[in-house]
Image (tube, rainbow, N blue to C red; front, top):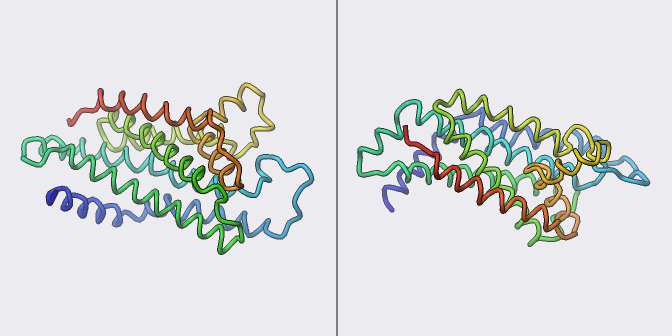
Length: 246
């Protein structure tokens, strides 16, 4: 336990020393939410609001970007770099099993995600004037399953990447198409039905939809929650089978 606590402190310090990680995890999604949220704060509500006009879409999108950055970029890049530098291999020859380093890194990344979720929620409430999430249990379930599914994807990327550079290259290839499917740039109501359905059940689309629904006080769609849970289990098993220390 003492060894794990020491590893956790070291990993936390290393994470905080990376300004780019902090910027993309927190500052970018917060900036987007404030720019668009404050700009449209006094605009009249449209008669038939689409996906992008829903009041909960913006904070849900910001939350999704923050968590997605950690899952697609942060976790795989760090573990890929550790493998590239032989840190995991060297640790495997010591009494400190590299699995503890992996667990410490996961805890740090999850803690960063939780902080990002709390900050975005509080800024949306106190700065933009949105109500706090109305369906708290649904909101927590959506965030937890979304986090788990995105980190499971990140673990598979980390398992397949021999270096941090390769891990950092795979992240955008996955992240930006999923942003499109989630409706970040084009409302899914403007997509063909088959593409909109794929987007609704994509990891980022399901996270955005379920968080937005819970924020508005509705129940998150069970099919989307179930998809994120199934994805977590399936990719978690795959990552555990293919992960190599060197």
